[in-house]
Image 1 (tube, rainbow, N blue to C red):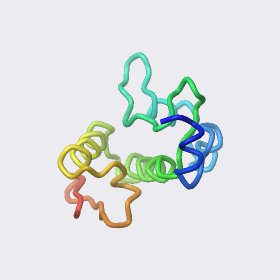
Image 2 (cartoon, rainbow, N blue to C red):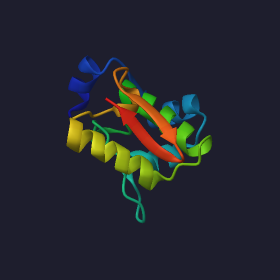
Image 3 (tube, rainbow, N blue to C red):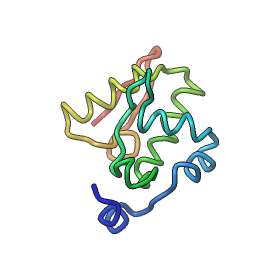
Image 4 (cartoon, rainbow, N blue to C red):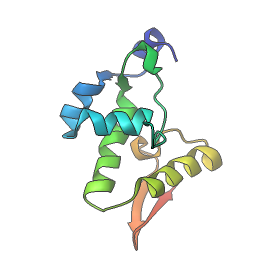
Length: 116
């Protein structure tokens, strides 16, 4: 999505550095989750292409907070989180399951579950 369109429709826009500061994480970690690196695939792609700048929408920021909590507090692997994101998008057409007030996400025995 083009940067101008995203600014008009997203309800908020954050630079990668700003979002990392608010989320209490490093910009490197947040950037790896959004864009991947040489040895890791992105957890999810950003709505704004990296060529237009490293920005997060409000929903991407909320999901980053949820992922940080799932990783740091509950010890979930990025593979499990990625699988849940992929399943929500593929099976239920939900783009932001961790930022959607209509979905509930919870852990049972270390497994991530969603109620839709």
